[in-house]
Image (cartoon, rainbow, N blue to C red):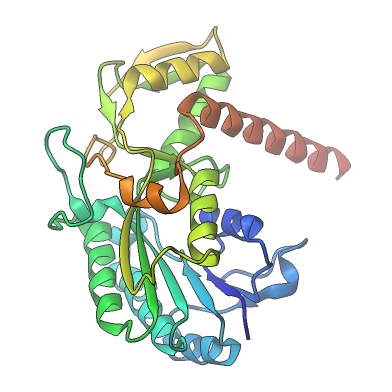
Amino acid sequence: MSGVVVIGAGTLGTEIIRRLQTPPVAIIDRRAAPTGELASNWVRHDLRDTDGLARLVSELSPSGIVYTAGLSTSQSGDEPGLARTVHCDAAVAALDALHDHARFLYLSSFAVYGAVPGDSPVREAQPLKPLGTYGRLKADAERDLQRTRGNRDLVILRSAGLYGSVAPEGSLSQQYMLRLVLDALRGHVTVPGPDVDLDELWFVDDAARVVAALIESPLRERCRSTVLNGGPGHRTAGRDLHAALRALNRNAVHEIGPTPEGFMATARLDVAALSDLVGNPATTSLPEGVRVLAQRLERQQSEDRLVRSER
């Protein structure tokens, strides 16, 4: 069967599905199928059943797989066994069941680099010194996938911190930005000082566009095994974050507070290789991304009020 399978329909997976030129032949996720357009191709499957996942991939025989399933940084620390299965074992099982010359795209993280001092951009050949359980699991998954790829095309995308979704679960960056925007709209937000640089932030719509292009478009050369950095290519300046939040609510009180643990500026990614393949990977500016996130929050709140009023 020709077509793409998406494993993991969380924040990024859902956005990727919307940007694929051809609907995926299957969406594999542990949760029950949602209502609406995603339901028809939804396959509910627990990724802890790696043998069952392999059989499913073999039966579907897709031309490509996008693997975005994972646990958040905090969940990975709390449940390391489950996290290893989801981040590593299930991904390897899916790749191993994929037919030769198909493409497998794995969403990794810039956490595999660890904290890189200075402002020099980090290239893909940088030695890995992963941060925490989450970073170590992503690094382990990359290693195991490289060993398993055989005659398949493997693309590993080391993503910067994603944001832009209103889903309460997700990465540290997603949860943090969601809280900042919500607090700014409410009129009182605690934010690091304007002189503090934070980790790179990548708007989820941009990341989804890039992933869809990488899995669907023929690359200039066979990507036998390609590692790519993904993000805007610069850290998040505190002054830019202050300005973006201020634009949402001019009357909001901005209280200076500490930078959340795990959100300090680490590596600054060199995204030249990715840009050469797909163009600018981050077309959404921070102010625009924050504004869109605020609009999504307000739309969700309006829908929630409407549902409550109809009960």
